[in-house]
Picture 1 (tube, one colour):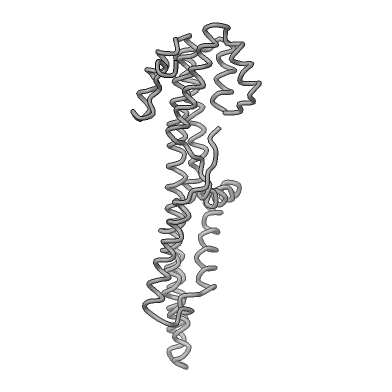
Picture 2 (cartoon, one colour):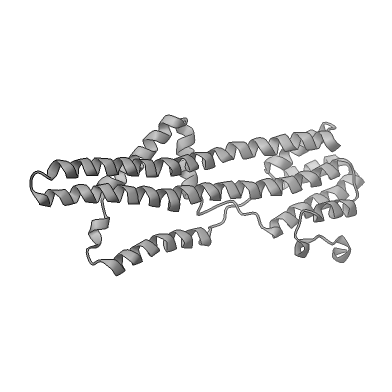
Length: 268
């Protein structure tokens, strides 16, 4: 399985992004509170959530919100992880060629390897599926899994589109309030104008600094997992065909960066 690891880069990016705005505000004015408006936040986030709930099924919306927080702990696929997965299959291929696939099944069950690709492939190979037929079936599994997970990215991308729109709605509301008060006390004009401008500001910030980057992070993570699964698929297909370990090594190295190439001769 692909493990989740704390993303320091994501954390620093958000801190730096908001810190940049805070620094600019502090250097420009001493009245910092004019940039704080709970009403504007409620209008932008509430409207964005409401529109998203109308557009998508509720369970997917809640799942996408969880994935928004999950970007701090994304699934991590490193070159080392790719190499290790390939090496595991190469070791299994040696056992498969000597003792048969039943011995490989026992290893997977003993070590409690719950990776969906490995478990699915194990079941198929044990029933006699191999080669191109096995590749087609695993490809379908990989693509369907990616499509399911990309729903979160698509919803977050949609939220990034909604947020500035509700910022503009807040701007119109603020302008209406401001114009309504222009015939009376001029002191009442300020709050309406502040609401008008802050909702637009909040809408753009939420879209460009939270929703859109989170959507791209989810999408990139899934692309990395897909790449890892493709390497695993190719390894398992070669294993099912009874290919020798050195041939699997050569086939898999084309997917890996040169510094991570597997060299069984050195390991021997």
